[in-house]
Image 1 (cartoon, each protein chain N blue to C red):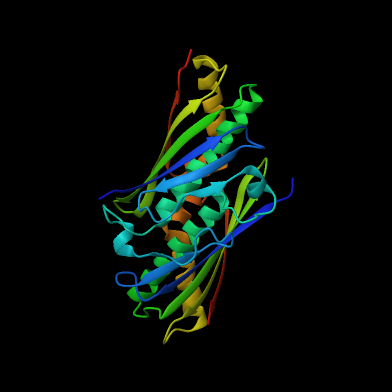
Image 2 (tube, rainbow over the protein chains, first blue to last red):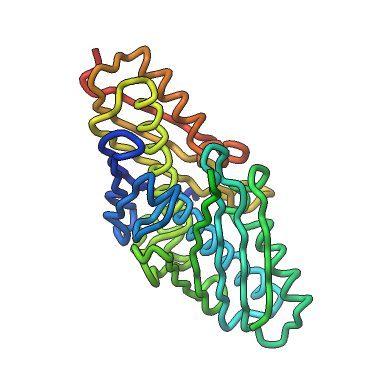
Length: 143
Length: 150
């Protein structure tokens, strides 16, 4: 069955000096979150940005997918620490998401872990949505 | 323009079905936000999910893009209300995919007329980096209304 998630944003003013707010999301756990152009395209000074939210979505999706790949192979992880770094080039767009993972996985060697991580990187739904337009990198190590 | 990098970190414990993860972002606007497989697909979720974060990213991106295009057209907005709804679905033979993001926008724009607004919305969609990104693999719908349009 399809799952839908919604987020609502208000924006006031022009792009350069205006200000936006992620007012609410389906789960209710996030928001209000302020966004503006300076924090997005220059230094992040305590405000989130679309790219930070995409990074959070990708790191979260990748961790789940990897837990599934590992468990199917009989190596359910004790702990996975993932990150995504999303690169945004103003005027060009989002060019890269670099994934990292450190895993505590009893009974699995580095090669096996890297293969599982590669499979998760290829198949998690957020990778699927980004793939084709964006370079996906992966650095996977056992803890 | 310089490139900008934004990072986020997740810790996950356990397998997919019974495990749980926590999401943190460097801006600090949320930290340790919990999520799990069960709540990701729940009809009344009580935790966030990758799709919810993408919806927030898309709505934020589109709002900025529309503000930029309206300003470029000489009619900066007073207020934009933008909603994004992201759909995750199981596609036969392909597993779970993000199949659609539907944008709904209401705009209060002094001096704008319907004809020019339609063009500006199309430009905003084309210029929204996240719309461009996911259009390769998912459907992007945009429904925009000019409030008090002339």
